[in-house]
Length: 72
Image 1 (spheres, rainbow, N blue to C red):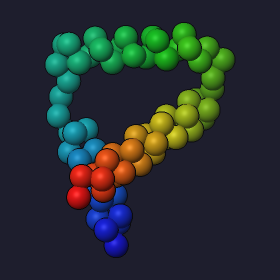
Image 2: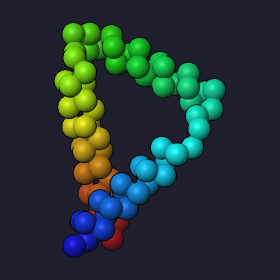
Image 3: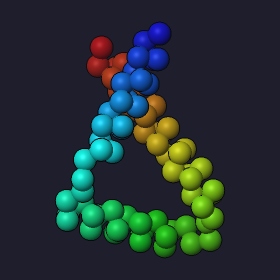
Image 4: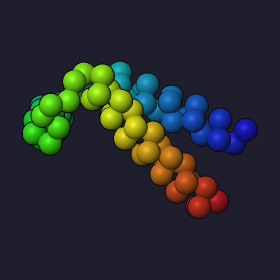
């Protein structure tokens, strides 16, 4: 039950964060991240990229949940 609440909270934060506009520094950072990503994974198709990004996001979420549980 507690994990479900944490997942829902995390999803809500992601949804809220997606609604605001990027500033010029954020846009430059995003473009830099995309360029680095393209250099480190040059032959990756769109579905492979989506799968890798999803895996990375899930790992980040798991780490955040574990850190939150350790603080309790």
